[in-house]
Every structure is written in C-alpha cells, then in structure tokens.
Image 1 (tube, one colour):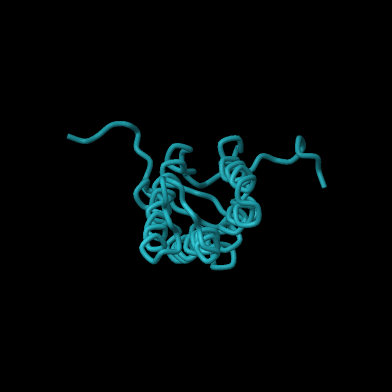
Image 2: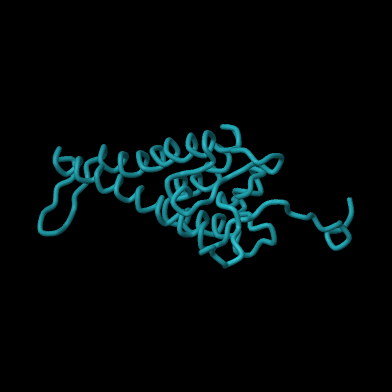
Length: 173
C-alpha cells in the first residue's frame, strides 16, 4: 500500500454539504429529540414515576431506565429509517442536504444507516456522560476532514451532500 502522501488525490464529484448546513441539521434533529425527551419526562411525572419535591426530582427505577434507554432507541427509530429511505432526516430536509453512499448518489441501505447511527449512539448509551463527548468528537470530525466526512461517515462509507443545485450567487430578474 502506498503511503498517504503518495496516493493520488481523489476527486469529488459531489457537492458536499457545508459545515453550517450539517450543524444546522443536527441542531434541528436534536431539538426534536429534546422535545420527545421532555414529553417522556412529563408522562413519567404524571404517572408518579418522577416525584418533584421542593424542586428536587426523585426517580423510580423504571423512570431511570426509561430516561436512559428510550431516547436513544427512539433516535434510532427516527434516524435510521429516514436515512435509509430518503437519505434525509427532518433537519437534513430543512437544510437541503442528504446522506448518500460513496458508491452512488442514493441513500445508504439500512445496514449502512444503522452503522452510521450506531457509531454516534453506542458511546452515549454505554457511557452517558463521557460518551456524549465521544459522540460529539465523532460527529464533528467532518469539520477537519478534506472530504467533510465525520468518523461515522467514513465507517459507513457515506457522504453528506447538498440536494439543491449550487448557485453562482446571481439571480435572474
């Protein structure tokens, strides 16, 4: 195998998504996730599994398990099918970007979508506090990468590209 410095440069035929669009999409999707988390919390409060006394919350065992495992499961049920079927979550659709495979301009198959999501989710599930930092590092890697791929994109052989054609900055009157 040739050293990296001697390998030919790969020319990208894709209009790679800008970092701002990717971050914007993740913010939108995260806000949707937070809304779901708040809804689950409110349900647990209304059922008595979370008691709030003098501004301090007391969690039952079932509430702790629900708040730890249900959000990542729902995140997977949200992200994987949308990525596999359309290449877009709600956030990606709003920011006009999509996930495609390295081999073709099409959404990744379910196996690749699961891998892409899992690389982000597993650290958060296994070690919630430290895992969040790992997930952030894996996800933000694209800002340092020449092909704008996060580590989850590299592992799943995907790219995030623009869906709208590029503009030259001029509009027709």
